Amino acid sequence: AKRGFHNLHTRFGPVMSPERGRGGPATEERVLCVDGMGRGGLATKRAGSGNAVGRSMGYDGGTMEQQGVAVAQGVHRIAVFPGQFDPITSGHLDVIRRGMALFDELIVAVGVNPEKKEMFTLGERVEMIRELTAELAGVRVERFTGLTVDFVRQVNATAILRGIRDASDLRYEFHLAMANRAVGGVETVFIMTSDHHALTSSSLIRQVVALGGDIHKLEGLLPMNVIRRLGAKQKAIRALPATPDAPEG
Image (cartoon, rainbow, N blue to C red; front, side, top):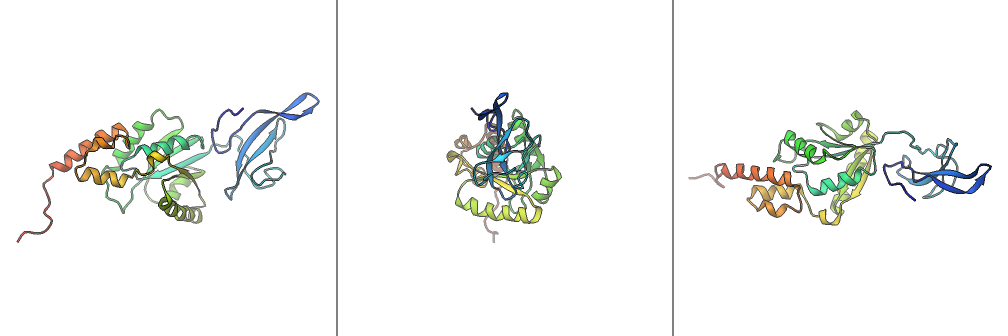
């Protein structure tokens, strides 16, 4: 039976081999391996052996080392989940929790998008996310500026983690992933968002707040600490003097 899926290179055993040796049944470990081309497969590693032999998903035998596949033994796998998170949504948290099962450590990298007007400062966003992930083992929150691939190399991460909501996201993220691999040699792992988060958008939420919408109707889309902070932002916006649409005269 499985013990659980803990990271990208995880053990599914030990299991008992049908082949019996002198000392009885041979103990085996099943290892999930991914190569540099993004191909994966289950490998069988017998007790006392330093090699794992692949038998599924395109691997037809031979050691994983011979096939150019990294068999992860004692390797600390780090992923970076980058974004503006302005604000962080329940959909983002869903990706974080599911990403934890794929890697040993997940870094939520909070950055600045110069093409978008911010509602929360960088410091406020980092603070909110740290509050929400404080009890999630293996998750840490960092701020960064500049290229994502540079930050990924700085923290010695294995991959970039991204969430996909729909076909439009996939097209954009595909081009971004290709660029990150070409520029920085960094692979991207995609997670499809849960269906009830598929329509959640931080940009739309900012518009609702700025235009005076009922924030409490967003409770299914946002954590409560974000709802409270958005309420304070909305009050501050309402207190500002109105800006005329056109000059008087």
